[in-house]
Image 1 (tube, rainbow, N blue to C red):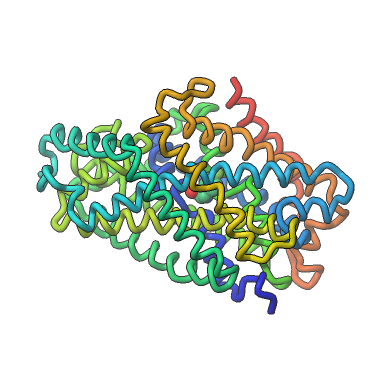
Image 2: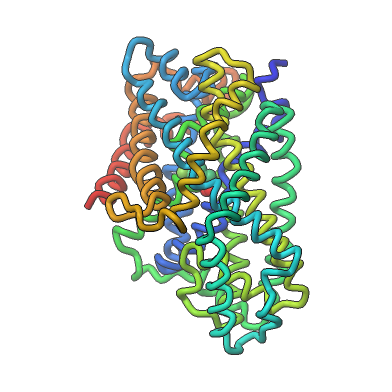
Length: 458
Ligand code: PFF
């Protein structure tokens, strides 16, 4: 068996789920759910995953497995002499930019894991009482977070450590690196998440948070809510940046693409749901305020407060940051594999050399992103820090453009019958849904994704 293939069905699913499940599910999901009104948003998100996420994922899978190359090579092979490869190039570019800032947050999670283990995170805060006055702890954790991310040295050092860890996995290759890592870490992620849920769901007053999370109020839905649900779908399923095109080139010919895409989407949803069951009951139980759920605050300020209310705060906190780190690591590995595959295919480099070439610019680029919270905080592009600019530019602009290009290519310009051949494994299995999937890829998905783009601009 070629080493450039996943070795088992479980392994390829674990690797793809590992790529999808990341900071997007555990950090971004609760924040956008909170900002968009709770359960109604959750339902919309589930609808978007089913109606658009899975079909677009199938378009990327078909392109990748039929192309048997990297994100550029797949387009080149299926449309030689045409400019479609530019979409692949944009995807590779996006995955690299995203890695530069994603890896910085991954570094923060490692630092917080370390501080949880040593107990430094809780120094000066002590035990908190549920329903008590959180003002002091609020300020203490916020100060810790700001102090940490706005000092130049430690975050950069942790970012570099994360780069080395990613390199260590990636030189191992598809089976011995990515697949082995995912086979171990994904079950660990689920065990940690379920253990945390068991604690938070049994807190006094947890029911109120669960109800808010699960009882929809449809009056809060606006066009912006729908667009945000779509954005979260693309972010959390790793669509539009060449990851799934690259990974599916490693799928064996007999892999059933439709069940694989469905399982990956369901697992990603499950992690988001379980994360909701950790966050929202805790917030209602401890009487924390709404602002505590926004972005970085949620993970690095609010959750430490929740842990400080529990017996053995260090244990729960270490578990949570380990969980976040694991989720981020399996995602950055997939983001980097996009460029590694390109270097191997395009320049014929060995895996080791391709890994080195991919990783080499990262320490400098990620350092610039990290320093945008400290030394470079005043350096702004379109009024945004370097970190925020790259995040906005890659996720809100490049990602939808690549997704539209993939859909239009598979729907209208790819060799005739390609999608059906891939979904039926060359006619050896049935695929009742290929007609519907094709309809969505041709019409619905490009229009809906174009709406996200237009909304971003206005
Ligand atoms: N899907 C993963 C996450 O939700 O964190 C990884 C990811 C890849 C996120 C690419 C965002 C992104 F643009």
